[in-house]
Length: 333
Image 1 (tube, rainbow, N blue to C red):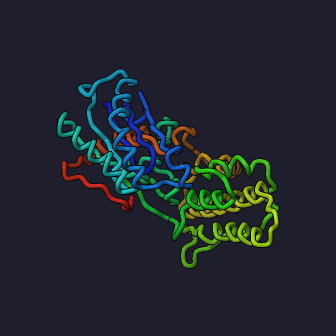
Image 2: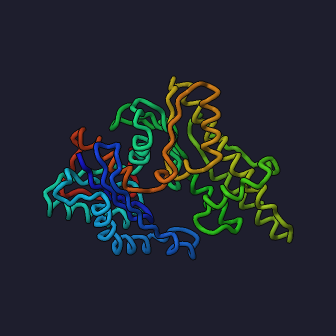
Image 3: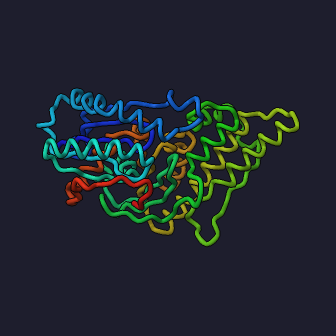
């Protein structure tokens, strides 16, 4: 079964053709990084305009690269939530128009579900149930994947997501957008024990996260140093911030895995590309003889291949939308 998938939840216009939820025949991503770099972050209005300009060409290229036409496609999957509402509407409306013109089934896909499904592409042997840590610019969740379309959130962030904290800390340290990637690289040359930073705890929930205090601590250190005309060793601060954030993620994730008796773990989302996080996840799972699955780096960020993977299982479960499908900026998994 061939799924044509469309992703436009933030600042990447993407399309892909995926076979049977596991095999990627094509994956095309049009990045907007250069458009947003001068602003230090994604500007929603610019993002939606860029999606409108790119989406036709991206979908055409995905079909061409897969050596198929719309006549070969069995269903159209599209990200409908959550994300930037203007960006989502571009993808959703395009998919609806394509569905109307071709009479192909329209499959709505939740963005977090598709991040989790990126693991099905990388790891053919992975099947539910398992526990997944989803870490991205907008989301930080510990999720029970009970089945391909059945999920239970065990823990989530109460404020900033991990990726948001990485980006804002990096921007304060003078790194270009996207900051999280730059911080990870710079941290490799720093002393991770040079700064003592707070590791927050959320009262009443041992699995939830809060990254605002950690982010603010880094920002305050930079601002205080600037006011005193003192230099801050950015490599050391980056390494210390990265270690604190990752250890916080690891602590809650493995606490949940132990309490819920999961020995098969996965990670997903843009922050899953962080080298230190991948290293620490592997170390902790190896120490426990647990199974760990992480997507290949190209599938960590937003892409349509993961939408096609999850779309396949949504289709099999009967999750078909009508032409009244709408986009949602926020929506539970």
